[in-house]
Amino acid sequence: MVSEIHQIHNALVSQKYSCTDLVKSKIEEIKKSTNNTANFILEEYALEKAAAVDAKIKNGEEIGLLEGVPFGLKDVYLLQGQPASASSDFLKEYVSPYTATAIQKLLNAGAIPIVKENCDAFGHGSSTENTVFGAAKNAIDETKVAGGSSGGSAVNVAKKYTTFSLGGDTGGSIRQPAGYNKVYGLKPTYGRISRYGIMAYASSTDVVGPIASTLEDIRIVLNCISGKDYHDQTTYPSTEVSENAMSDIDGVRKLKVGYYKSFIDSEALDKGIKADFIKLIDTLRANGVEVNELDFFETNTLVSTYYTLAMAETASNLARLDGTNYGNRKSAGNLKEIYAVTRSDNFTEETKRRIVGGNQVLSQGHSEEIYLKARGVRNEISKRFSEEFESVDIVLSPVSLTPVPSVGETMNDPLAMYLSDAYTVGFSLGGLPTLTAPVGTETGIQITADKDGEAKVLQFAHLLNELV
Ligand code: GLN
Image 1 (spheres, rainbow, N blue to C red):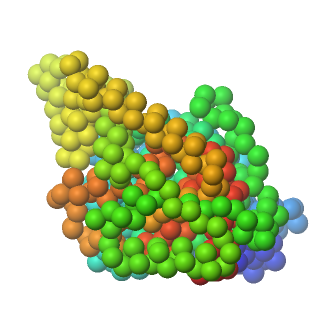
Image 2 (cartoon, rainbow, N blue to C red; image 1 turned 90 degrees about the horizontal axis):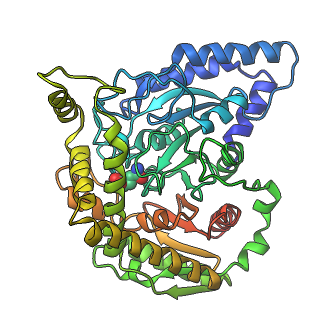
Image 3 (spheres, rainbow, N blue to C red; image 1 turned 60 degrees about the vertical axis):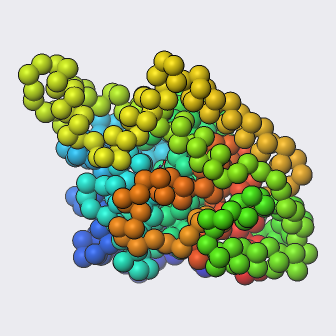
């Protein structure tokens, strides 16, 4: 597939259409859409930027590759002067006081944000149903969920309302909706991209990442937003993924692949997805790729470790939302009651469940037994990943246990929803780069490499495109 960013760039430069017309038509499509992907459309803001790009082109000035390219933002990113609600009642009227680093880098490159996208409130969910804006609908079948929590972002890309979108991934929120809507979604290595200006869910696994229709677009956006940022001390300086690295298909065939037996043996795995996954492994072997079966933790251990830590971290992060410094404040008799009423009325049931769970595992008498134990298990998981990546270059896994659920199917069963993250959360705990490619199974395939191995991941995705 040809890069959409390149296509738009060429069309703008050759004046096939103007940037204003492009942005207008995308915004019209979003407005008409029944997929419910937009919390806020940045019409005035985007059209002003588009006019500036048009003026530059008319003047015969050169424009950069990303200049004038319309993109979407999950509604957890700050863009100065624009709303940022996290799909919650709490922040429905909140206006961003500054701009997130990743967004600033895209703005510097001239890309144009056109929409703040529907998502699960504060990233809490796997379907984009836990949102005060109403459920987003799947791009391919509107009776199905969009996936989550970055559901609106994945649907916008699949529907071509945006050329690419920035999602956020704490435990699968880019990879799972990408798989549900048949587009690419990359969760980069933890620390490759600054988290400054993205609302924190679980700070130790939160990452910023692109969703796009082509691998080349993922690569372009990744290169643009990566890098050390003094606002986020967990960031590291990374090297660009070059275009040449991507086309070395013969080199990629030599990469050693592994997959986890425990993932494929899981009772909960849908038979169709299992059969397709095994077929993919057979195809790789038939094409001379070395594939090894690996032992790993049971998916239940990964899910319980992740949710213990994610709930603890979100309880701490959301403590700042009390209606005093941020958010819609409710009135009551005294300060303590104001906090209580404000928090009870403004958080969704799912968010409250996580805050209560998180405070429980952090509380005296429980923290040693639960929270600290989970941290210990997480260290073991990371150690095991490091060991595995001494013998293989790439780990393949399904994205989800089941085909895409219908709207309403998992909303009332939180435990089932948590368990549905079985294949995504482990790689988050390891801080590893993982890409969902829309191939192999009905909900795609996850391609994972060791830390900072984005180039390998993207190269391998190219190989899969050649072989399946
Ligand atoms: N579904 C997972 C959760 O609810 C992951 C969400 C995310 O990555 N933001 O925690």
